[in-house]
Amino acid sequence: MAVVPISVNVRELGVMRGAHPVPADDIRVNFIIAIDIRRMDPISGHSTPFSPFQLLSFRLSILQDQDRLRQVLDPKFAGVGIDTSSVAYNAMVQEIMERGLGAARRRVDVESRCRSVFLGCAIRAVLMGTDTDRDAPLTTALAESESEFERENYGMVAAREASIEKMLERVEVRAGDETCVVCLNQLDVGLEAARMPCSHCFHGDCIQKWLSQSHYCPICRFEIPTNQI
Image (cartoon, rainbow, N blue to C red; front, side, top):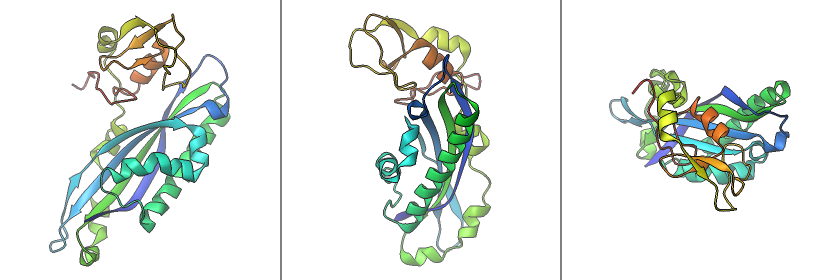
């Protein structure tokens, strides 16, 4: 069985601004990836959806180096069954790299205080069983309606404001090796940080801004309630 990517669409979802100008190398790219996998029936040509969701966060410089980008992407895609050695996958990675870097650079050019860029990536893929299955009409999968993640802005739903206030705990940073993954800066010992119910800690303003765009923990995807829940 092999999962074959057939299309990829990358677009900008938003930005997180800092109080001061941020060097381009320090800008964080937050990738919201929706993988719309269609299980193809080789006889009828019909498909059923299976949509795993991934949230990746890394420095902008990763998008400039395909080898380093592959180190980030390959384990995630292999985990949902995509053949990372296939020609189709290699082409998809190149597409993600070029489109993602282009979108991020356009935003950096106009936002000197840009700290994080949010990018959405919708991927269509087909689950094939054997080589003969590859004769099933791929146009069937391509003709399916857009995936639920894409229609709902790639899962980027803001957390309910009251839930943020209730569920974020103010704590004193005690360890000297903790890093806020939103801004990539160290959490200084003795200063106050915000801890989510999943125990992950961040700068208070960083996680507040993050949760105003996405209700998931940027590390483990713990969910904060939204107005839609």
